[in-house]
Image 1 (cartoon, helix red, strand yellow):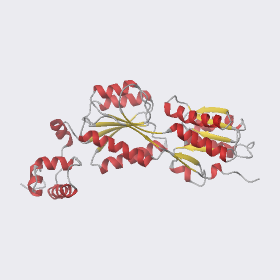
Image 2 (tube, rainbow, N blue to C red):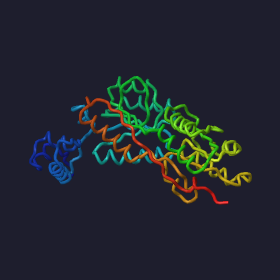
Image 3 (tube, rainbow, N blue to C red):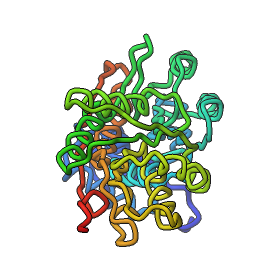
Image 4 (tube, rainbow, N blue to C red):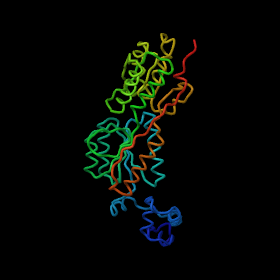
Length: 334
């Protein structure tokens, strides 16, 4: 039978590579115990024969597919979209296949994870979703190891990779005070997640330590259109500096300043996420960078460890953010 029409089996790859069939399986699954030379031999043999492993069938037999479920919310947020892109790239580099589900709210995230329970995934990564104890318990009940790329304060022990939002807020306060600002406002998102509250808490606490207080606080949905509508209320406070809960709110505030005839001088503005648009000359936005490269790398590393050994104990990692200073917090000359 012609090779193009014949279904190639893993034992044929093993024979061509002159290694055991089990070694072939481990090499294709990305097992770190397999040397790079051996892995290359397996890949070369598989490519020559046109072998395509059936991950689902392998999962039914070995209870491991190399498929990782990824749950993400709000892909309109540039930060979430970029994080998802990095996760997909890094999972692929580990020879893991992502299965992506999108949910827009806490209920959406919970529904997406519930749907994942019916798939043969080795682990679940939940990216920037609002989490409840029910979601964590659902994954545990379905025996799906969970990695949260977000803050979680529930009672359950779970893998958590998160940024230090409190220290980020303090860092922003120090920067704005150092730039000479003496009145401050916070542009909050309309959510009650611990992450958003921590950003504000760190900011306000450090202001208090420096002898200042928050003079205004306005909240908005994380949407440019909605933020643009409520931004004039924030500008009317006359605050000299504004810390925004994310870059989308900061972009809307900058646009509102341009549209306001009363705003002769723009306040100093800091965003959060350091999304790609922040560096564009039209915004030139000072923003907190969450160190997304390190955060996604550690998330994928954690998920990969779970795939290799499902009994890997849960760990918690906190990633230090840093401030990228740009023109939006430079003192304007008279």
